[in-house]
Image (cartoon, rainbow, N blue to C red; front, top):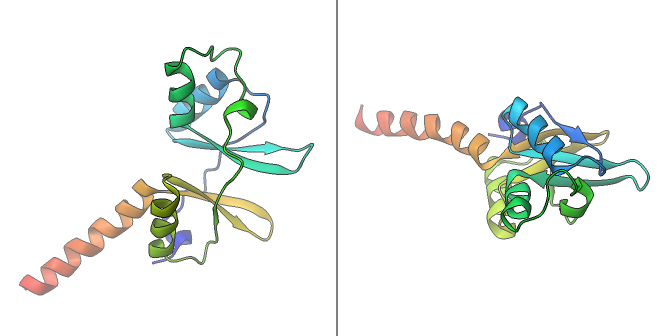
Length: 134
């Protein structure tokens, strides 16, 4: 199975000047754990995750003042839609993160998370077990 089969195509894109509270609100409404941060001035692409927001608030930073730019991961590993789920899982495990921005030639087309991968793998494992038993 490929990344394009598992990824969410609902990509929340925010700017670097969004506050952490604004980002959290948008992520919460969409029930997603990460936002793509696009800095149009630098053409930079990064990711802000729920963990980034949690760490900032947990360390006493003000979510109404802190901006996405300050907490965005810019050293991002990107996935291609044609990667296998195994390749995506390996990249996540190696890098210690739970989300990958999926890029094609035109920019971000999705985000794949550990949860997305598990959602795809769980039915396949159940089918495999049923075939072994049956």
